[in-house]
Image (cartoon, rainbow, N blue to C red; front, side, top):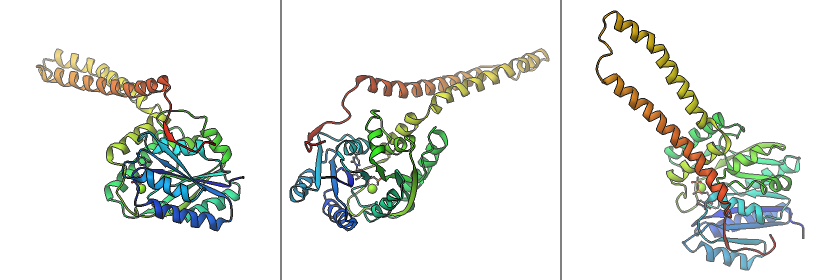
Amino acid sequence: MKITYSVIAPIYNEIENLPELYRRVKQVMDSSGETWELILVDDGSTDGSTEKIREIAQADKQVRPVIFARNFGHQVAITAGWDYARGEAVIIIDADLQDPPETMLELAKKWKEGYEVVYAVRAEREGETWFKKFTAAMFYRLIYSITDVKIPVDTGDFRLMDRKVVNVLKQMKERHRFPRGMSAWVGFKQIGVEYKRAARVAGVTKYPFKKMLKLALNAITGFSYFPLQVATYFGFFSAGISILAIPIVAYMRMTGSHFFEGQTTTLISVLFLGGVQLISLGILGEYIGRLYDEAKGRPLYIVRDAPEDQ
Ligand code: UDP
Ligand code: MG
């Protein structure tokens, strides 16, 4: 049977949200009058979500469970969803219902008009702390300004993609992933649809500051060499300053000034350069670590249980 829509929801300890997620996705998808499937990717949940997913899938064959062997992270869970999706259009949605399933119909409308990537833009965010909103806003703008691909701001992973796009994304095997960047990178006909991001229905965010930082690093290193270039800029800057300083200090000494005597200036410049060098090394290390991960070529994720027809 041909499937029109594949809805992918990554799940990490969302037991309270699962029944409501299923109910609303089913309602919306049934109302579209087309065939659909819901792929629930269990990203190593420990709160009983796994059993709940199995239960829902048992009762409704349109629900396909992909159960990971452990927690691999949101981005990797989305990737597994792409691998198992069979639909003509693939939609990624958060399991906590912050992305209203009803918006999927608006995304689908644009798809029918011929757009191949329809991303949902957060016009408003409800029920999130100012810290989350502030760091998110900074994050989107930083990424936009330093990466080589123009990744739309205030846009999460909530989006619809045509089968053609998903087939390309499936070939992109990078380990440290940033799906929204990847789907901007591929090109195709893209458009945004504004929506109001709701508050979480239940539970707490699974994105503590540390995970957000990791995501930001994946986005920056995955789509830009800017941090590596910063070392070069710093190098030129400090070299430039010291070249300028040589004649000035020589002149002052010859005219009898004792301004630069003592160890303080030496100490400051040594510390400054030492700092710059260590930071540059750290940046290099970030990229080398990522290269090393790629070189190992381990599988992106391990499934304990998944539908047979991939
Ligand atoms: N998620 C996941 N693995 C993780 C963390 C989160 O699959 O390691 C899922 C989570 O269950 C949810 C989605 O990713 O469906 C978005 O997470 P969350 O709502 O916690 O992020 P926020 O909306 O706070 O940025
Ligand atoms: Mg959320």
